[in-house]
Amino acid sequence: MKKTNHLRKLRKAVGKVQDARRFEHTLGVEYTSAALAMRYGGDLENARVAGLLHDCAKCLSDEKMLSICKKNHIPVTEVERKNPFLLHAKVGACLAREKYGVKEPDILNAIRSHTTGRRDMSLLEKIVFVADYIEPGRRHAPRLGEIRKLAFVDIDQALREILRDTLAYLKTSEGDIDPMTEETWRYYSRQGGNLK
Ligand code: DGI
Ligand code: FE
Ligand code: FE
Image (cartoon, rainbow, N blue to C red; front, side, top):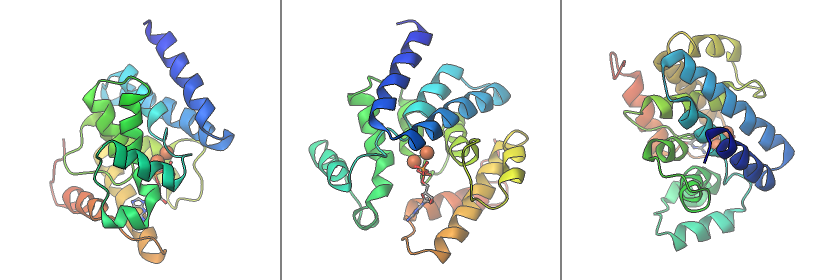
């Protein structure tokens, strides 16, 4: 299929499963991912597809996500069972493959890691993680202006600052911290750690 057609079809399909606000966020992540891919020499098509699909499971109920995990033998950790919204990343990667026909592993990984991150992320994974945080419709994050600018200067540093602020926020809120988020922070906050 021609690339523009493929993107158009995906956009239409995602628009049907998300409410208007979430869909606007999705479109913001699509083009912010494309902009970051331009800046860092990533694949534009992959960036756009990953951005479009990263929250494709976000509007499903907790029960639905848990049942998709069960059906597809996706392991659910204790923290995920207590905070099922965390599952939208894993479930999203599963739907991207099964429902939206995505085969590229890098795109599937970028969807899977977009909430907690993980160690040694690929450029595309970093792009989607950062785009999710800085897209123009995002509000209410501290230092957003600073981090938006930093994202286009040094993506690893932006990733680190986002992790720092996310963990600081989580420590003041009710939600459990996923060990993966902690691990990502440890990995990227290490002096000289993976500064690709
Ligand atoms: O789906 P989005 O809202 O676009 O963004 P997202 O998938 O990055 O989710 C953002 C929220 O996830 C934000 O409020 C921080 C939260 N989050 C990230 N890591 C963890 C976490 N929440 C919990 N409870 N535990 C985590 O480890
Ligand atoms: Fe998300
Ligand atoms: Fe998102």
